[in-house]
Length: 403
Image (cartoon, rainbow, N blue to C red; front, side, top):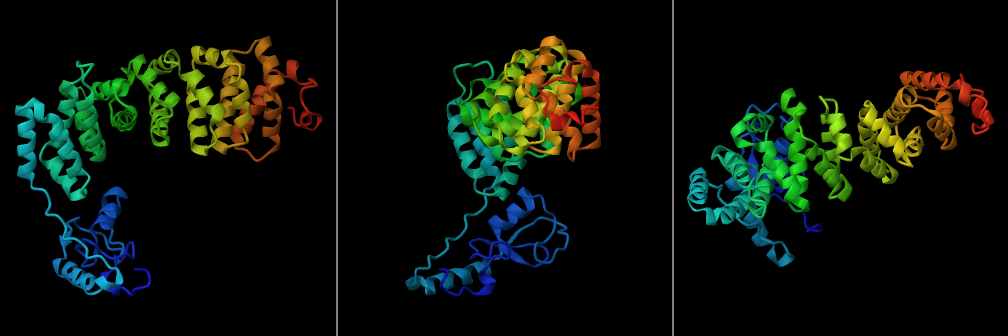
């Protein structure tokens, strides 16, 4: 098709590809449905890509005339290898979905079949997702998951429900309504899947939990149980997917500052797993999130003790300073500062010399770092200068910067 000249008005202005389902927005410009839906709903844009005008509504009107012209052109050029574009399916009717849900509620044996059908409908485009929401599918899915919490050996329905729920891309308002509805037990349902589901379902549960806690009330953030941290650490340890790992890290960073969550995190094995992850981490944002989480955990005595008990704890934190980003360096120095202020003993101070942590702090004073990071490094070095200042472990060029 690359060698055939396609009429310009048959091309989508976004993808510059032949349109398969042309729709017109309120500015009068026609786009391929898949591309404009991605622009509006996935990328959260509110303007017409061509005119840059603000769209007063997101109604997409099918351009049947243009679609028929494209189909006729495809037929005319069939001998050149052009395939005729299919006529788009009619949008799903809300009454059909309501009937499907009602039948599943009435006959439990049909629930899995219903969930499979809802999945295929949701995957057909944004207009179907909107229709599903208006028909009460979100509440049905959450209810299905809740009803399976007590059934340890029947996780299949919950796995099917959470997949559809995740791909509906719930709005903040919808999420908040689910989280705040005590009878729905939404967080508990997600935890159930996180604990017993397959890898993909656990990834969905992790990402939904992260979104749910972003809109949760402080009392809900404080009330998190240790077992949740255990399961989140299992997601990180199993390395299910990069997306799930990022969501898990962002989730614990969101939760640790609240109440006793740092101690719960330590009890859930967070420090050891985060150090192991940091040893292998090379991607910038992942390193930053791990160091932020470790910094938060080192705000409690239990967290500092766990980090010091790991043979590579101080060494890997020191290594990441000045090697990843300003954010990572600042967090690494903060971790060392917490250890030096509250958990320093002769063994710890000697270990910091041996693994190069003291030399790294001296180097921080010489290079282009944030002002607060330098001040914190200077404070640490001054605090234990009696032990460190004349040590042969510090290279001579760095001793000149020792405060």
